[in-house]
Image 1 (cartoon, rainbow, N blue to C red):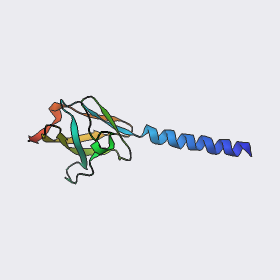
Image 2 (tube, rainbow, N blue to C red; image 1 turned 60 degrees about the vertical axis):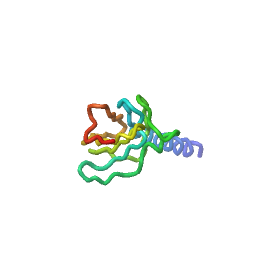
Image 3 (spheres, one colour; image 1 turned 90 degrees about the vertical axis):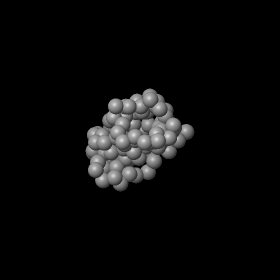
Amino acid sequence: MGMKYLSAGLMCLFVVSASAAETIRFWNLASETVTSIRLARSGTGDFGTDLAKIDADGEVDHDERLAIKNLSPGLYDASITFKSGRACLVNKINIEAGSIFSVEEKDLVSCRK
């Protein structure tokens, strides 16, 4: 009987560990604080919810990493707005399961204020 509970407990631990390993992180390497980041499958323009709101203060500071759960791996475009009001796009970000993807100044295109 005890072995059954031990097996069930180990299975639960494995499932939790596997899902934690799949968490994707956004690393803000741009020069400003990000106030909004929305992702769309590359080329669709169908940007989703604001991922910056996941963070406790609703912003992603320079050099801060933001954990994003339930994001499928793939090729994405990002719409990013900064604290200064500057809004930019980043095209064709390859996001892999359990990885960290970053955005730097050199990645930003089509910026406007």
